[in-house]
Image (cartoon, rainbow, N blue to C red; front, side, top):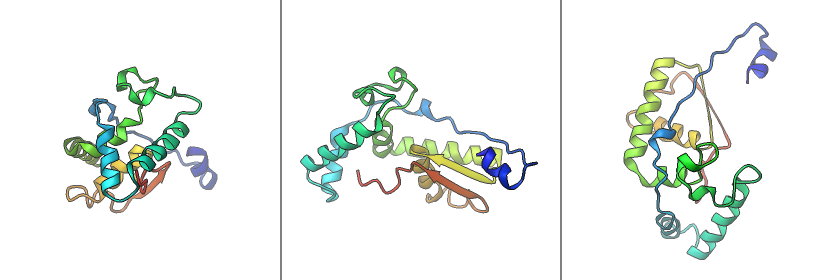
Length: 154
């Protein structure tokens, strides 16, 4: 990111910060609830939803993670990440509230010009920026998302 910015202004020295949130996740979620929700919302019958999950999960883990790492609690996963974090985020309103609160506090403390988010971070940001309590926190800032889960039908 620095090299890209310095291409346009070599004297620019960006300052970065990040939001820590792994500690808010327990690693406990119910995949069957997510499959049932997907079917109920008309995305696909359960069989097709399982097939879609298998396709997505197998693609997520090559080559760094083992096929069943997504089932492990955070402490056991190789880098603290597990695929169930999105499912856990989806199922736990208190978790979403805590994440919104933490992100709002970080933005207010750091006062970034640009907010960049990847994967689950893009969901946390989108949820925060479209919530009642976070509706103005992104005003006057640029929001960049990449590897986003936004719009993922599962």
